[in-house]
Length: 370
Image 1: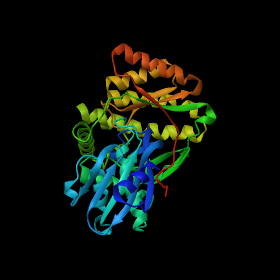
Image 2 (image 1 turned 60 degrees about the vertical axis):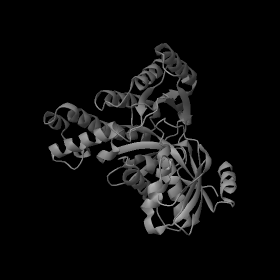
Image 3 (image 1 turned 90 degrees about the horizontal axis):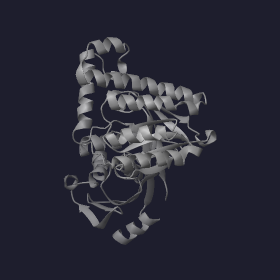
């Protein structure tokens, strides 16, 4: 295992444990998680592997195979920068339950594709430390720890979806999560049995929403909920009445969140009925809402969706935070090449950078490798 060899070369001994956690793609339920709503992600085959040995002192030594060079040595949590913040944030949130650690990281989540490499990094490290220190944390507690690290240490106000998908997912199934109660259940997503695939279309446009637009959307939703007198937009039951009381961006954001929650529930109903081939229309509707009501799409994402449908996809939408990253398309296996050709040709015609295509099947959540 590459990460074990790297750990041994850097730190002079084998790691005491090795854990892997996956990235995720969201089938439907976008920007609903921080509105206490419903989401339906699944883990992807790509993830982050963390090789870890605890230390008796407070020092943290970090090595990433994706950032070649000497290990980074941190005497205090405040010294963390860049990618190391996601690791050190987990240690910081664990407080006195852990001291320092030697950690080597190896990841194969496509960077900037909106597949949540940060959650995979947080959950893999949290799971390894939980194992080593016998903390007894459940998968959901590991997810919450990762979210807290990202919220409070990194400064990204994300919801719980990404970390929960990384920690709780099961192979061949999507994860239905109620982001208020944190109740979850897995839903069979046997695409192969229906001759279907989920094709991730990576626009190659890097998105970085830790700063502005993501936080702005969240603030708009919270403001709208306050005006409507509800704890969160998830609680809006009379949409028409709510929209009459709102205007501008807050009206649009509310329209998206309420209808997106309904789409999640409708899609789950179709999956449970075995009607996997019928979910495409809901994906299309989700994209239009994200484009027009939530205003988080981009020309590259819109073109990916449009060209995928033209090439024969049954449904498609942007996925993730938006402003770049990836789209997902539901595609019959015999149309995969046609869809890829259609998107590639459309991108070339517009002068966009060539997209990357990643067929994805629902993968296993965080697990120990050694």
